[in-house]
Image (cartoon, rainbow over all chains, first blue to last red; front, top):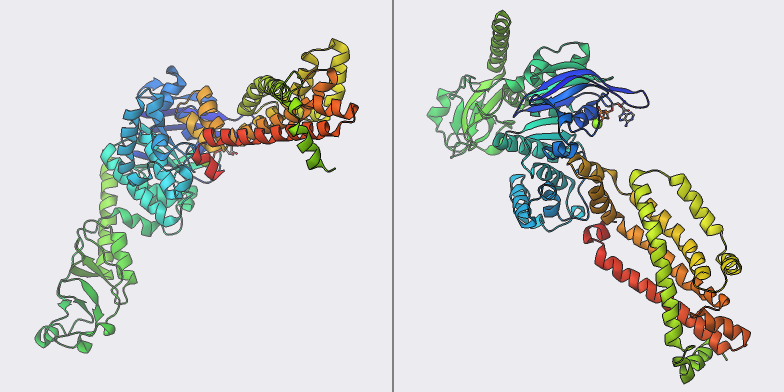
Length: 376
Length: 222
Ligand SMILES: Nc1ncnc2c1ncn2[C@@H]1O[C@H](COP(=O)(O)OP(=O)(O)OP(=O)(O)O)[C@@H](O)[C@H]1O
Ligand SMILES: [Mg+2]
């Protein structure tokens, strides 16, 4: 565990970048440092690998002060990823990744084999191995940066806004990739971002810093959303905190209805039996949703698809959160969300009312747990 | 007679191809001064440029040295050195080196300073010792500029080394000075052609050197 113990950083010009900060960074989890620009995130991160020395206080790694070991030994045990990847433009991708193993004295061949392994791990095509950084896209370069940091298999990974220079689509890909890698490797990751959504998505724990380098709140993301410590945190979380919080509620318990689902080939009897429903979800012969139709306007035997209303974005019960389910219901012109299985086949539909009840139930559950925890 | 005729007359004269005043001798003398002067200038300019560039200190002092170096007239210095120390290699070497150090020093400093700071930060952050940061991260990227500083210095040395003839040292300058004195324009044009040829050859050597030493990753992106 990394323990930041009452650390203050005052730069020579008098700027106090970090002010008596204490944090316990849990092992094998992603801890995110988030806050407005200039609040001391980078300074905090760089004090962990001694790129910046604290003015006061100490940082402990597994109980020992990080100043106890030679600085380069410490740094080689911590992967370091920075904003624009900081790749060495004169080295090939493979040799960039092999840098730290080579520093540690691993023979060239072995280091390169290890680097090739890592390229695969971070989702880089092995055809890129012999290329130079300028031949890669920003997103690919960032993957190389992550691979390079992981090359010597360090227990700790320090990441300073690693994904902020790429477009939103690529960023989402990189975030998902990081979560997947973390599932496999279980590193202790300290991740700096100024993007609260990124913090909530990636963080096991999130530390919100305020300007002047003071800790505003340190909590799991769900707690942050449900109980911001003060107005600053609430403000920083943004306006739709309630909606975002739904990401932490599972959709598995939603009560789905199957009655309003009919196949394109449904006969007149079948349609008649469901005539009281305002809308029916029509599926193709494989059971994949095609769209919503009003029962009295559907033709038995073969439905004309052009009469169907868009069914919005379906959700996968269990995998997706209540947020996705609610989003699906809100997007749907009928006010009903469509639930599908992993193969995209409709397994049920659910109304906004039912989702609303599920949200209230989830809130009650959280409140009860909080009381139980407080009583203990 | 035009310049080409002078040159043809000079190079076709068999007497110019052997003996102590023959082209091979003069050429070798010229080349030897030049290479020696360049090596000495590089031995001074490169380490100072690399270190000041790496640590980012001393930029103002360097700018001063550069200006002073450019302002110093090499010919005046040569005469001064000659009066001071008499005939010999020293009065020739000193002006050549003084001329060559500023471009090497200043360009090397600038080259290292202009290296993108983020790979350097990444290198330190992953635990690379300072010497490796300099030689394995900064220098490879700065190399094209460093070489261009050396090239400028080399060209200046090659052309200025002609003045060595004034203090009775050899080199291709002999043809020019003797030719002028003897009003033998074949010689003047021939000597000037040889100096120009050597300068061109220097360019080719540096071009080849950069092809060999600069990484394709740097060449293409820079
Ligand atoms: N080397 C330095 N010398 C003086 N002041 C500095 C130095 N580095 C950072 N600061 C100041 O310390 C404060 C915190 O800087 P830091 O880089 O840690 O912020 P940050 O949270 O990472 O910001 P950003 O989101 O913009 O990257 C800022 O006010 C900054 O101007
Ligand atoms: Mg920062």
